[in-house]
Length: 72
Image 1 (tube, rainbow, N blue to C red):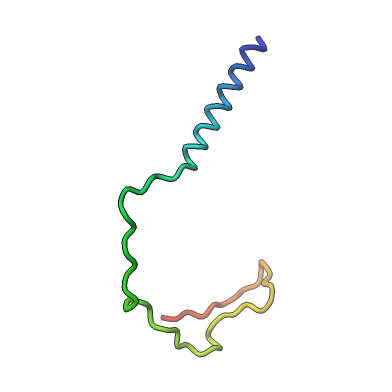
Image 2: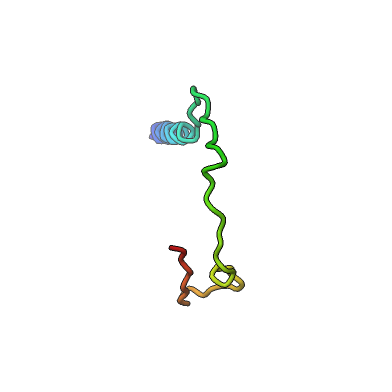
């Protein structure tokens, strides 16, 4: 009976390890990567004043309410 349990455990561990290995494997790329878009499509620089840009300067408590500035 212990031989059957040991065999079952080994088969189970093998199946689990093979499935995790197959998930980690990266697919082979057969096509060359696309070229990067030209630099002309870069977003415009941020022109907001510094007082509207949120820069965290201290830890924030979990129950503390914070309003983040939004650039619309």
